[in-house]
Amino acid sequence: MGSPISLLNQARAMARDYPRDAMPKGYLWDVVDFVPLIIDAPLTGRGGWRWGSDVAGGDFESGILAGYTSGDQLLVQDTTGAIAHVNDLAPYNTITVVGAGPRAIQNPVQLKDDVIHCDANGARVPQIWRAGSIVDAYGGMGKPTVATIYNSMLVSAGEAGVEDIVRFSVPGQTLDSAASYDGNSFFHTSQRVSGLAALRSVVLVFHPGSVERIRGSIPPHGTASTDSDMFVEKLFDRVGCQDPRSIAYWNDNCVFADEHGVHLTDGATIRNLISQGSMLYYWRTLYATKLSLAACTFLDFYIISVRQTGGLPAITLVCDLNRRQWFRLSNVQALTLIASGGSRGMERIWGGIEGTQRLARLGPMFFPTTSNLPVADDNGQFVLPSFETPWYRLAEEGRKRVRFVYLSYDTRSSGSPEVVELDYMTTPQADAYTTAGLLPPGNEYDRFRIPVGKFCYGIAFHVHQVTGASVFRVFDLAVEASAVERSRV
Image (cartoon, rainbow, N blue to C red; front, top):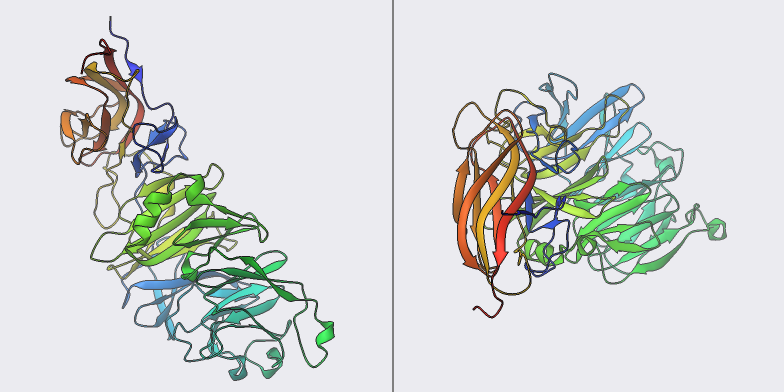
């Protein structure tokens, strides 16, 4: 009697920093469009994202859900410079152009009822978006490119000619008045400032290859500099941040990315989430073709979309911040990611999808619902989850007779009679798989046996949905094999 060996071992995440034939339990070689949050199966295909706006004049590249005292407003800017108010509730399609302004390299930030939007080129003072108007900040404030909010102050930097200076606004003053500006309220830092972030007790000052921090609560002001308790000190000298769109927050921590990985810091220590998730080789290869980054946190996930040069599709990686594990999403070509911070409705996330001139609501990907229709994104592309396994030796080194592979799954489709393809390869360095078989849909838990018939040292599998289906759940992958005399070569 054959005794199939189960292979998945509740694996949900991908890793690349191990030899494919020596990966630890719990990891797969690749995981695409499966959502680990869902607990009805070890691997459950994601839901489709939905449009979050009508077509605008350009692609959306920055935005914020502004929590005004008069109510939330989803404010976005497209690549033409137009600033629009998009309805953040159903039917999600209303776009009201409220003005125009310079393009930005980061999402706006909010201080009380002022949303501050900086010019990417540092050619003009920041704009202030209010619930019913758009005005310029006070002209003496400078022309920063990046900003954050710390202790009721606007902290800004990146002004041309003084790229190393970090400025502070005067607390309690409206930003379009001269009272908001103090010419002595600034710090020199060691290098050009490429990004800013604020935690509970520190301001993180990002440079392209390092990070400094500003500690204290009272910045320099007036002529009585002794009243200030702030000071600048070096924090990290081996990591930095060149793209402020990668900066996000989670549980009193800041998350940011550079060529070394994705980093999590509380302002004192730093952890590389890419290294902890065994994805360093994958990340560095991906970053080498980076065109832009866009990131945010949603629930306990950090989501980063990496657009690539050479016409390559964007790679969107998701990190489970509690487990430090990674998986991938396809068909999310995001120029910007906007996380909700308002008071209305559940936590939400939007993405400005390149080439569509529309916002997408990405939250539905994490909460798939079962219907009679194939799961598809609103741009018409079917969601086709897939995973690739490690290369399994199955026993001690030597040849094995691999007779059958068994897949336990649940997929439902009223269209094609063949929905799932199962492939294999018998060497860990192969460039292509051999198709073992195509499997049909059903309406319940199914288990199929597919012949392999190979005399090999080990085997790896690729399971992928090949056509639209309303659900795809994977419960187990097992193989029936037996070792032969180890002297056989």
